[in-house]
Each structure stands twice: as C-alpha cells, then as structure tokens.
Length: 297
Image (cartoon, rainbow, N blue to C red; front, side):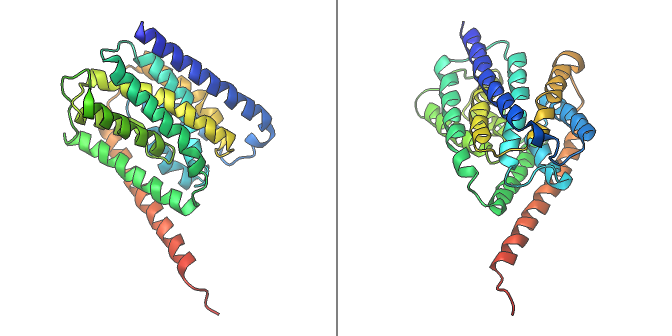
C-alpha cells in the first residue's frame, strides 16, 4: 500500500512539472532552436547521458564537464539546466526501479520532505549568484563527484549496515543532511551520491538506502526545477532532447541492456571530471583576479 501511494505521488508531482515544462516550451518555441548546439549531437548525447546515468554514472557530473566546453549552456543557467533536464528521466528511473520498499515509513518520509524543502527554497538564491561563484561551486561539485566514484572504486565508501529504521538523533541527522543535499543539488552538487553515503553512514542497509535516494530525488528535483522554470533560468533546447531521448535511454537501460561493464568507463569519466573541475576552477580564479586588478592608465 505504501509503495502504491509513493509511486502515485511521484507520478502526480512529476506530471505537474511536465505540464509546466511543456507550457514553457510552447511559450518559447520560437527561441528553442536558436539556442546553441547541433540538434543531432544533442540528441545522441541525451540518449547516452541517461542510459549511463541509469547505471550510476552521474548525469550532473558529465553535463558539468561537457557543457562549458561545448558552449551549450552558460554558467548562470547551468544549475537550472542540470536539474530540469534530468527531472523526467529521473522520475522514469524511480518508477522503474522502486519495486519493493523494505523500510520504516517515517525513515522514508522524513528525508523526502526535507530534501523537497531544500530544493524548493534554494533556486531563488542560486539565480542571484554571480556566474563566477557558480563556476566555483560547480567545480567543487565535480571534485566531490569524482571523489565518490574513486571512493567506490577503492572500497572507501561506507558499506551500510542492516537497519531499515532510524530514530532519534540519527533520524534528525538524516533530515538535516537531506535538506542540505536538496539545496546543493540546485547548484550542481548531485544528491544521489551524497544521500546514499549519508544513509550508509547512519547504518541503513542498501535496500533501505535505495528508495530514500530515488524517492527523495523523484520528489525534490521537480520541486526545484519548477522554480527554475518560473525564474527562466535554464536552456530549453538541451532540456527538450533530454526529456524525450533521455527517457528512451533510461527505458533501454532498464528493459534491454539490463547491465553494463562500467569499470573502464568510470575511469574515463573520472579523468574527464577532474580535468573539467580543475579547468573550471582555474577559469573562475582567473576571472576573479582580473576583476580585482586595478585598471592601468
């Protein structure tokens, strides 16, 4: 019964988001194809981005690494684009993968509500940040993403415990942390890895951690994304491709490919992420230095 309610609410929340996204796309249809990016390349990219994301390769990290180099999305619109472009594919992932929930109801509801609150409150502040600050934060987000991948490769990630229920201070910590992850998700620091690491560190077993991770994102991302749509802070063209072909990538991954050898791909992704993080941080520091230097007469 709980599973049916949660899945129904995921469909409801994401349907409201989809309606708002479609209305915004229709309203700005003349502008969409004028945005930068080759249509064919974007279509192929969107398909493989979320095929890989379904197997655990962060779409946030890949997009943050690629978009500045491809000049598809500027720094100011990057946070909104990262969230909006993944909303529908992430909802499809959640619906496809949350087949059983062996977890205490309160332990599931608290992080979902807290992450939703963090995701709802932060966009209005994110859009006011200078582009240079956003670059720095995204650079840190890339380093964190690379760190999680490397930690997993070397067995340094918490492996979780046996608990399916948290109470007292542990439940409070989970709520506070997921609130922060929901807020930081809107700046480019993806919440999947951080939520999973928090749940494992508090002793939850992986079976319990997974619905928390997927459920929190399936609810919080559309909430934050609707704020970014309202604030007109995202790239519509790439979002159009990810919301259609990205979903096909998810479905192919779930029902056709089933599994994928990620070992070599993860190392390639780490190298790309670290290169992008370093170059983005150096670029931000260079711009900051140029602003601070006095103009010589």
